[in-house]
Length: 215
Image (cartoon, rainbow, N blue to C red):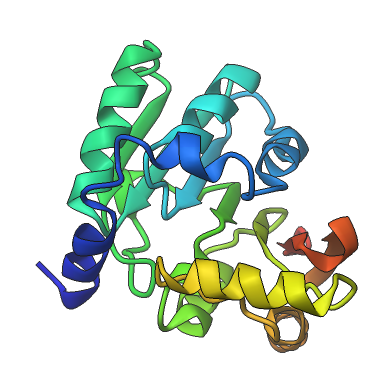
């Protein structure tokens, strides 16, 4: 087991059963991301850092003719995800496995390219988040997209709110990446991708996408 897996299991092991309920009030933008997927029938969609499987279940219900995949570094969270997927009777639509966002293999699940890949409040929890972003961007096929929902810089919110939020998030090893837009745009230029970035709720969160043009 890697150090990243051990760290995540220690942090979220006792929270797995209550994670989705406790995060619902402040992980904003996740459902907008799922709605924006609109995957073509038969296409493959990958979630990096799928956690409890909450997003995969919602996405598979919303887009029943697509195929969904997810991985997480935490075995504890994957146990919860598999239970959630089975409870939703979606085992034919969703597959999950253990892997690291920084170096996941190209042929994960033994499948071809994933037409859409997404992070949902994951980069703020990965120490080497820029490497994870680079790895995901490299996996975007021609005509494909990488989508991200994440904490923003909160610059248009009151200073007291920003301070309290960041102290609260730090308790769970969560660090908003204030320079993520800059990093994404730099990555897009380097790799010939299109970058779309939309701030939500006065900068509390954002939804962004990297798109690779078709050949």
